Length: 318
Image (cartoon, rainbow, N blue to C red; front, side):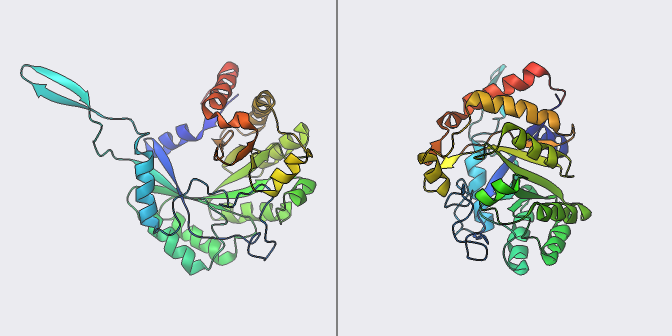
C-alpha cells in the first residue's frame, strides 16, 4: 500500500510544516438560500461544515492572524543556546515568535457562490498575506461559472489554488437522499474545467451514507481515483445534532459503522487510489458538543492510532 499523506506532501512542496487556517467568508449555499432548497444537505450542520472557522464578521486578515494564534501551540519550539559562564545552557524558548506557513482554507458553506468581484476581494486579501502559501476553496461543482473559473486561474498564477469539491457519493439514490442537488456529470464537468486551467482538485467523499453497501462506497472511491483529481478527503459519516440526518438516525432508519468496519474500509479504499494521489483526510472529526453518532469517532487520537497501525502493518512507501 502506498499512502501519500497531506503532511508529507506539504513538507515536500513547501519545505516545512504547513498549517491550515479555516476561514469563514460569510457565504451561503444554493441549498439554503432557496435556489435549490432551504434545509441544506441532510448531514450539514448549521455552520455549513465550518464549525471550526473563525468569526465571519472579522476581515480575512484578522481571521488569518487569529488562526495563526490557534495553531501556534502545535508548532515545534526552537532550541536556543544561552552562554552561562564557561558552559552553554540549552533551553526551549516558549515565547519565541516562530515563523510558520499556512494554507487559507475557505471552508464554511459554498465559497464560490457570490459575485465574482466579492470573491476577488476576499481571495486576493488572503493570497497576498505573506504567511499564506496556498488557497484551498471548498465549493460545489455546480457553483463554478466561467467568470469564477477565470478568477481562480488568475489567482493560481500568484500562489497555488486548490478547489475542494463536495461530491460525497457517485450513487444517485444517495445523492437524492442527502439532497446534494446536482447530477454526477456536473462533478465531471467541474473537474475538467478546473484541470484545464491547471487548478488542483480535492474531492470530498462520505463513507457510511445510509443505504450504501460497502461495495458502493468503494465504487465512489474508485471513481474519484480515476476522475483526474489530485487529492481526496475520506470522511466518516457523522450524525450531527439538529440535522435531518439525526431524525432518521433516532428513528432507527440506519446504523453507523463501527470503528473496526471503518478501518477495514479505509484499507480497501486506499488500495484503489493512484499512488500519487494526496490523501488529505482519512476520517474527520466533528464538534464533540454536537456529535450524536458514532461516538467512537470523538476519540480522535484512538482512531488515528488505529488507522496508522493499519497503514504501517501493510507497508507504506511514502
